Length: 179
Image 1: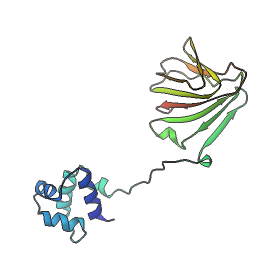
Image 2: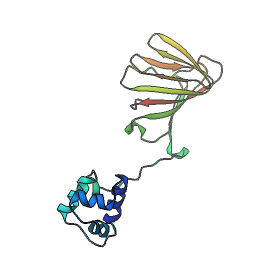
Image 3: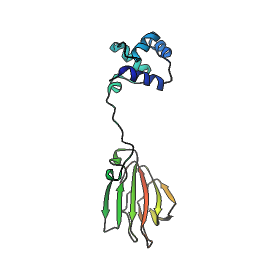
Image 4: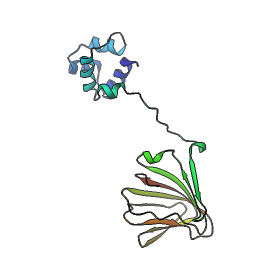
């Protein structure tokens, strides 16, 4: 691990000059410069002091950085179908149930429906890409057409249907994940 480079990155993120960091740690600007250029190594006590000023600790500083996947290809996505109810369900982000939100692509055949969900914490958002769906929330029925969206807090039983004659397709996002 390149300690000096990582300290420099943390320092610049905090918008501190070498001199400001040195003053807060009661060190010299020259020491900070040498440290950032890997020309010297700090004692553990000095490193703890520097990291505290930079808003971190030894454990987090030395933790291996996990490369977060940002983009996903078709092969990364998982799809399931329910022929009986007439829908196809595709998780657009693999393992998204571990995240704060869960985006999915739902296709509902003419006369089909997606299974009913019970009330839960969070929020749900959808955007209709094709066709028209009916959104049922409790005893309320709302029609949502292509190019329209919906947003609600799922405090009642809820589900969608396609009462039209052509397939419907929508992006549906649940926060936190519930699909």
